[in-house]
Amino acid sequence: MEEALGQVPGFMEPLAEPASDHSWGLFRDLVLGETELSAREKALVGLSAAAVTKCPYCTYFHKEEARLTDVTEEEIEETITVASNTQYFSTILHGNEYDHDEFVAETDEIVEYVSEQEEAAADD
Image (cartoon, rainbow, N blue to C red; front, side, top):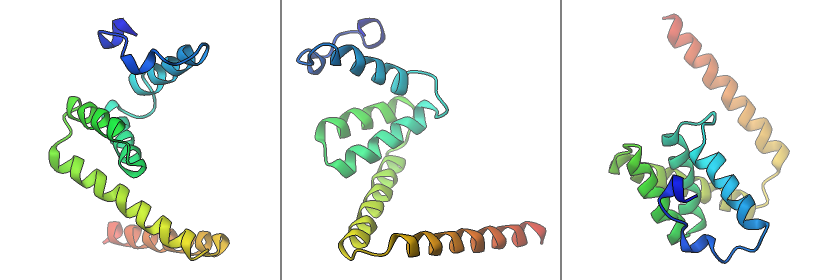
C-alpha cells in the first residue's frame, strides 16, 4: 500500500483483519489495477457513485483521481449531473412502483428504435 500510495492512509488503519487485506486488495485491483475500464473511466464511475451516495470523502477522492487522469472540470460537472439524473429517475420509478417488466419492455423498444435510426443515418 505504501509503495502504491506513498503512505498507509489513516482510514485503512481501523479495519480489522482480515478486512484490511481484502479491502486493500479490492482497491488495488479495481482502482489501481489494469482492468477493462481505463483509469479515467474508473475515476468517473467512482465520482458518479460518490456523488449519488453523497459521501464527501469519496467525492473528494474521486474528483482528485479524475483530475489525475486529465478529466476536465466541465467533464466532472457533467459526470455529477448525469449521476443526479439517474438518481432522479430512479426515485420516480421506485416511488411510483413502476412495473419493472413494463420498464424493461419499453427500454428494449427504445433501444431497438434508436439502433434502427442510427443504422438508417449511417446508410444515408
